[in-house]
Image (cartoon, rainbow, N blue to C red; front, top):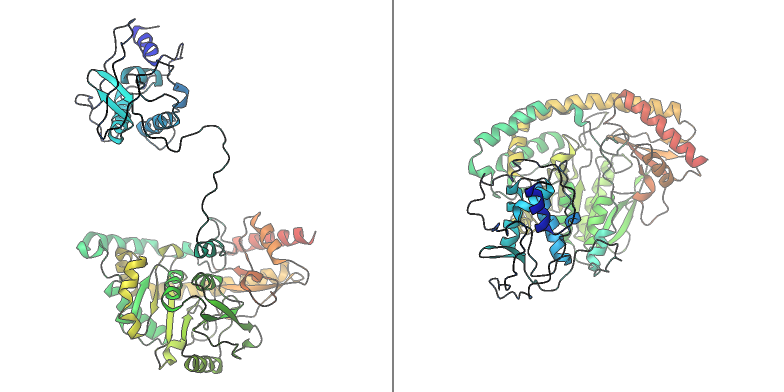
Length: 554
């Protein structure tokens, strides 16, 4: 054994450790190439001599030091270094040493090995050890002494790192509101499971080349206005672009000042629930209906009363008692059934809201995708009393990860919303908003929307043909003319939750229709999104879905 290795073994006091391959020149990013001036002293006794323990020192802050303990073996096996990890070696070493100190594997007052000795044992560069030691000194785990190696500070008793399996410590339960939040449904799918995720657009067809150039251009010339948290209600250019688009495409009448840009439609529902509802208030909601909006209202403490909706008769607008504080509807493309609210139902809804002095949230779900005739005008365009709040999103038009939605507020509410937005932080990055404004005003969105309507119409017909051929006896598809998803009603006796679970095992993402019901007897079916699948994916997905149904039927 060389003199250097003997010295390392002596200082580590670990007996006959097998040295690891030495890696010359390890450095922590940002560290100087020399240890000169480091906070850590690397003083070691001459070979063959023991150091006389010096009395422990008191670090600043009057942290108590115990008497110098009897030397004991350094727990080298607790320092695991993984060169394949993305975490830098010095950080791995730091975490290992913190664990040793906090678990008291070495008692307070113990000296750590010299940087040279530990570097030799671990096969690391000395600067890597110095960087870890310096950080521990900075954070108060170690204390330096003149002419000696650093020692472990006697820290107050606290939670210790344990390496044996320990029973979990019971934590305080969340608040009642927190428990409500944690109990709400989750359905965001998984990467690669595009068949048949409800409401998922085809991101592969999005013009990311154009989008990337617009973002880069704004990033290069944005100035300070795009890189702060200004314009919390939305970038002015985007609000103007949205107002123009909504008027031409959906008949929505509004000024840009009435538009509030949010991080998606769900963020709008959450904010509106907190703004408009107190615990105990009544909300009328469609049944079956969108569980994301329902979750926001439930967490706000609202009482949900159902407005029954079915494929044949539409909305049952016989008012239940009590009268509502808020009414939520998806009139352009009812979620999840895909039907469109008739004019007589729209007028009846506005009349009920007027009588009850209630707010109306109009969720324009999939309103852009109608495959016969033009998209129908929004209810907001018929409102004359300033009670309809229109909510939209770019998730289906562009791609969901963009996380940009919007709401159109009545003027008196829009004028005071800035304080609520500042409190909740529910405003989207200005850089993306500015790029989206360019995407709209330069005509890219209209071109993309026209192209995707053609593609989705073809995929919709192909999907219906394949399902009808392969699953004729198990599924009946609803005859809807709008939206990028469709409901498949299951044959009597087939449980939709069991089918969705069996499909998930085959990388097929479907949503059971029964989970869209709360107060009435659920209908067994599947909500099936077809838009993100090309012909090959559709055929393969339907075959896997057939296998899942066969498994449930036994």
